[in-house]
Image 1 (spheres, protein in one colour):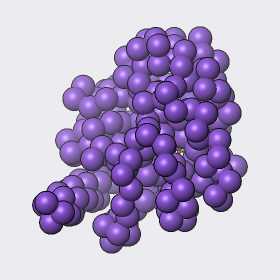
Image 2 (cartoon, helix red, strand yellow; image 1 turned 180 degrees about the horizontal axis):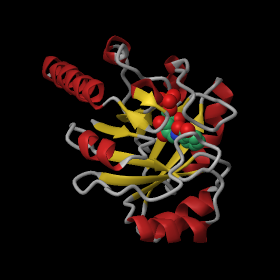
Image 3 (cartoon, helix red, strand yellow; image 1 turned 120 degrees about the vertical axis):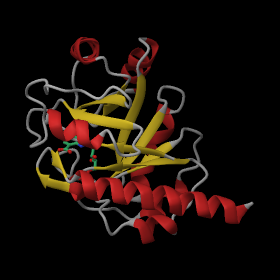
Length: 212
Ligand SMILES: O=C(O)c1ccccc1NCC(=O)[C@H](O)[C@H](O)COP(=O)(O)O
């Protein structure tokens, strides 16, 4: 299971968070977000994949930032087209397209992105495009029958282990943690993160054992 922690902004906080068992760390390049990285932190993670989060940014601008920050992945939260996803993917960046899941109809647009993305991210609808701190109705994902693996996102917090233990889906590949673990916008409680990630991975591996 992939664990992504999103919305990091501070060098020392990044250094501490990197010690948890996460796989990817996200940086938000969207100026209206309270978690936007307006300047490069004095430390960037070296042992986990760096994910750049964008909302309707131009391909050239994304590629330039990806180069400057040595990003491994990009995550797109706006109205980016399958063509733009394909272009970014062909440049060598793993591509995650985010979808707001507020109704069954919301999943209809997903099929057009199969084959142009490495992952999907299913999130809660909000006017800010992300970071709502609210979860959506995960049972809507029963209607997702595609083959692209996805991250479950939106409103996950230290109390979410029980709900996650009841969630199953053949394409479920990981979780995305953000405002539910913040001390302040852009600053994470790294102790709470570490404790949660350990509990999540333990719960998931026990479930896999039981399924054998
Ligand atoms: O977090 C933001 O401020 C944000 C703003 C605009 C686009 C994306 C944003 N976050 C991207 C994420 O991957 C978040 O982790 C995801 O939306 C879930 O956030 P939360 O509900 O706070 O757990």
